[in-house]
Every structure is written in C-alpha cells, then in structure tokens.
Image 1 (cartoon, rainbow, N blue to C red):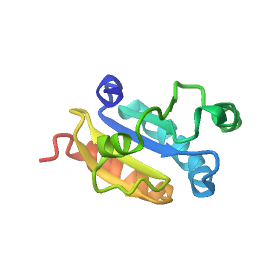
Image 2: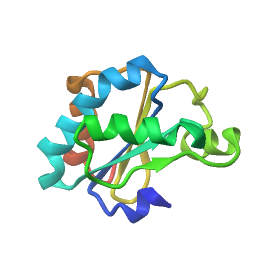
Image 3: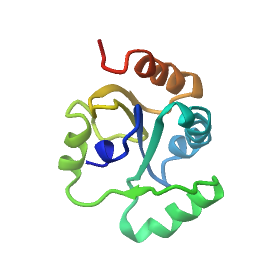
Image 4: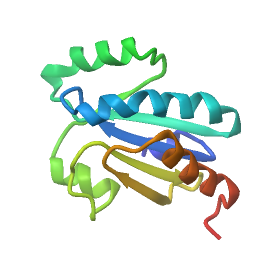
Length: 132
C-alpha cells in the first residue's frame, strides 16, 4: 500500500535494521540515490526491521544520516511481511525492492548493494517505466 501511496515514477523500498552492519553501510548510497533522482520521480521508502523496542536507535541512526522524510518500522507477522515484498526473499537484510509507478516489483537486490547497482536498476525502470 505504501508503494502505491508513494506516487513515484520509481519507488525504492529498502528494508534495513540498526543491528545489520551492511544495512548501515549502504544507507549513504541510498540517500545519495534519493537526492540524485528525486527530481526524476524517485521515492525512497525505508522500512526498519528493528523491534519496536529498538525504534529509538533506528530513529537516532536515521537522524545521524540526515533522513528528514517519513520512514516505517515493520510490524506484524514476519512471513506475511516478507511475502508482501517477494516470496523468493529469505528475509535476510538488507533487501532493496524497486517498483515502477504502477506498483509492480521490477528488481530485488538482496544483500548489500552499491550506489552503482542501485542506480542501474533505477535507470532501468526510468527508461522503461511500464516494464515493456
């Protein structure tokens, strides 16, 4: 639902957690991607896999990174959450899912990714927004 509400030409959803070192390492690249492509319709949704008791640490980390846009924290059943993104995903973090403007999953990057990897997938969606 949040993907469709984001109203982006391309919607990047990153699932991360404060205890996940690779998640923390790739965050600056995701934020740079957002800065570089938001004028072309990129929306970035960050979803923390932290427990609600760790939400203060998650908020503090995002604050340190200069995140000033709304972010989300996972709630409810783990398997339902995982399957909502991609039934082929094990649930391992980090995980980044890239959707087109119609809310269709176009790319899944499982594990730590680089700016170049994120950018290549975003450009693919921008260059063929309907997947054709």
